[in-house]
View (tube, rainbow, N blue to C red):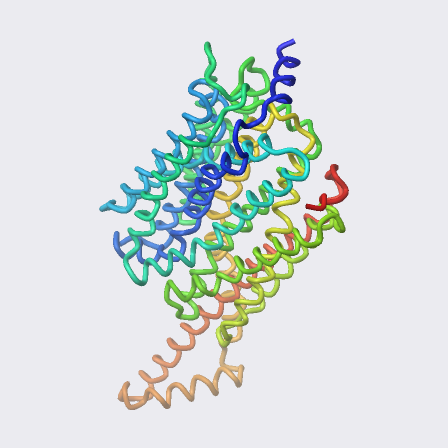
Length: 523
């Protein structure tokens, strides 16, 4: 009976004002949250230099934000019922804003990692609630428009992050990439106070139950998991006993979490939405796509700065065509109307992502800016053509009262995928570099005439500095070895981008498993 009452209420509920004003604060909050997933990417070398830490340790600034977001996302349904979705939304924006200020004034790597985690706790709830609000507040043709706006924000904000972060870092200083959230955060709170409304099933309720054990097992799962991925490469992975034990704790936490959610009477997340085929396969695809997106945005600025010599702003500008491609795809998406189905859009998008990744894998150290611009533009087109249809199709067969729980679970798994992808990509670069170095070093032997000619040429150049031929030959050999290290690192980046491309191509057949509207309704 309760389900029937809920269904009737949610079917009859409509916003009292314009739904476009209603989604204004949630879109602004989503933009801030998604922007901060990548805005610090190009500033990582500067942050590492400020606190005198390694590049690997500076990545904790990214992963602590993502993993904290993962922990808070399943709690959304509880807090929406405990204090009302509107109040919880404003609280999340407030915490996010204060934490942003704390990031800017941090005086140690530990403090900024804690502040970023707090920022993730505040911001993790924003995107799922925005997705639910867009799906609930609109119907029919206008829902397509609203989801198009949501998809554009989710895709474009992480792409604009490196550009804004690079410009601010080069022209001001890196703390200001966090300070800019403060005025927009308070503006978002004011807009939410004015326009945001709660439907009947997202209002404050009495006798709300918190699944304490579910939350405990979630923390036992995710926190050790992130430690393993962040520190695993430095500790030589499972050759270190503490990595083995930490991984075992994470595995046990994962198993107990899902058991508690299946058997619990009032779980944090209702896993029954996974019975929906669209939601199951759509969410699985979004997990991998989010990992590819965030991992590529983490390593591309580093490659451009460390290998090619770009500054932070120039590397951000080189990535900006992803945003141009996204806007182009949105124009195509709206212009073609009902001529192309969601599945076709998704297939074209995955093909573009794979093509863009493969083009990035063909880069070398003697390239122009256009060699980076074109694949990023193709990549941007693919992101919109992929994310928007898959996000819509994954939820289109669910009831409105399932949206908050489903979007929370989906964003939990997506964020975990992004955090793992960001952590693992550093290991991929390191291990692929070792593999390529092992292969390239075989060419450095006395019977290789090209090696001998290059060694003799460099030694001749150093003779006046070294004073004798022995020292000159030593200096020449060291220079050749440094070039080998540089070449093997570049090859590692190329191989990583090929892995991303193959992953996108593999997802194409899964588009046929998604059901729903065959065509995008003409607007």
